[in-house]
Length: 144
Image (cartoon, rainbow, N blue to C red; front, side, top):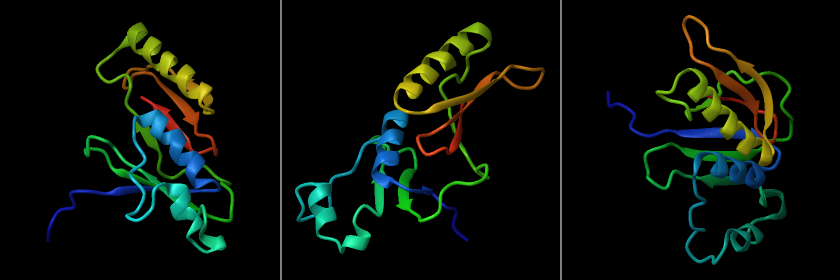
């Protein structure tokens, strides 16, 4: 049995392009070039049947290291807490006040992009501080 070398993270959402562009900003990801034969993603989108237009969007790590992110339109809204969430690692290796300052600065940047700060989980005997947040459609994630 071979081991998996790559994986994709898929988000169900109402507005795939909007959510994808938010996560591009969060992670430093990029939108890949449109399919061959199309000058822009808008051109490609207009070529699809009306019911498929805007139904998905992707972004990827420009270094090729991180997973591809896929955003697909679904009819239902988010109603419960995520069973899986992303931890955005901005404070790796930092502790105490230095870590908190780094987390708070990134939190302020993401709030300006439309994220919502939920709460600070302060450091305890086992874990360093992190900030629980929600993206622009309410999906939980952590600044860690």
